[in-house]
Picture (cartoon, rainbow, N blue to C red):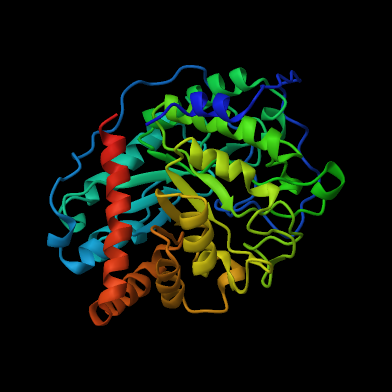
Length: 407
């Protein structure tokens, strides 16, 4: 894989080094009805921090090299799903999703203050549940460690990560170095995948207060696509340098909406086009070999007025895959609790996302796994073209696991 830093330099004629204070902004005294995405939890109380990082990493099985088409269909289908658990303990429902429904990927969600060592024990429990139920393929363990109000894992061994707006004021070299440290902390806790950085561009500071999913929570690196690109790729590069897969989100951008798809329905972006300058951070990340892109669930009127982006073949396959050339793993934003997708059944959400060209269905409620996986199996059994789509998606997910295991 090409160095993300090298590609960033090639993509940017000159790097503007901006120095600013490194302290986190004061917490907000009130919050809107919409909450940060993916984690779907309120900010945690202050957690103890430590500059020391354990080097031990939870053991995990080797990634099997068998032909995926030899797997039984329910096991194959499990590879294209990711459910979640609270980080303090492996929830019984999540363990059941792994053992009973072959779910091959888990997110640590919410807020945890137990620290690296305790988190690693939870990951060991999750990995132990996999094995035969997942066809010998290991779990891909994810979390959401952006910083500020969106930092799932805290406590001893985890840095207190400042808000993204603060990170955007650092030099790219400083951000890359600190992101490398944060990645090493995640790796010591057994995490493989960070659902960050945010590459959404909020137009200006005045609009940020009305931009419920991103700007209100200071989740943007800056107010121009160029600033977001520079700092977003520095964060992504640091994650990779520390042994963690990054995720660029929320394609094709949530910086110009006013409602949060997690807590509101009928969320629309009325501006983004297929040649929009606000796509530049995503294009740069793809050119720099980003491995995972997360889809927004908002509707983009000028791209596909009839479907949310996660269910839109013109956006997932036409724009992201074909026009921008992304060939990595496409993950959904949460498809279980988000109000934006509540107009269709959980079963249909999973099938529609995969049909659109997605690869990894993120549904944080493990109680949805039985219905979702069963629906995909049933559809694959009766539709050879859909089965081929599922096999393609599973192949991408397992290729990501193999690539990560070999580093």
